[in-house]
Length: 396
Image (cartoon, rainbow, N blue to C red):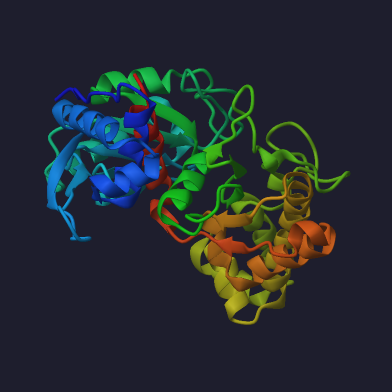
């Protein structure tokens, strides 16, 4: 069924909708206080939202003495789809208008199989959610992909780990297939939005969100809004050089952070350590499975393997080296570390913190929390729902 969601007519209505989304049902008195509108103007704008079907009455508010105010909530029928496409997996979720997850499905895939194959899987998962979560329509969808995106058009541009995706009209194709508005962004930007919406960054407006996985990227949030840069490539920190005479990266340069510490780089270095005989623990795991992953390195480190511990600490040091430069330049209120490699545990986070606190100026790090994300696997899909709802809850 094609979405027919109305749009707010002005900035006042947009602010009211975002307040209802982020804070749940509100009394008219509370809404008036938050948006600083006169009682008559507030009543007019709320009534227009009710008539448009974007909000609904929600009973009487608690008494404050005198006449009781009426509560208003965002329309419970709204449904947003969040899709987080990673290099090796995809997560798809549907939320209500308050961005509560109503259904979530995930499966492994290889983004190198190309957009047609990947989107067949996405549409299949979205179809399953329609059934399991009793959803008859989507009002909008937010899609994350693991590479640079020209945001206004929703088109990936020369993504290093996504062969076959360059210039593919993701936004246009999925909008036609899903029958609703679609926005497309880099996956780390969606993780940042998710953590801002319902995770560890709820209370800050200026922060960095670093994703460590198959690739490495950074979501930059300034004044509560994602900063994408002029062409959409802001935050591509995986290709900042950390070793002047280092390894060649998939981007064509040498010494990039991603070439020395990412999911693939860690698996490569772990296998080399196993084959050279430096790590009996990793050698045993390689012999048993035929391959090694970041999970194997984490398990080996937990078993006391010093080589695995050194691999994790070395990766944390190089990552911290890059984050320290960002902290010195941007002076954020928080750094959030997310992505699959956070499963490596405390040693990784401790190494990142040590390097940042050592390298960046005290004024920038004196009260700087460097923390793990709270939402884990659902951060990207919640961020996708936040992205498209921000768009829909803006004046038409």
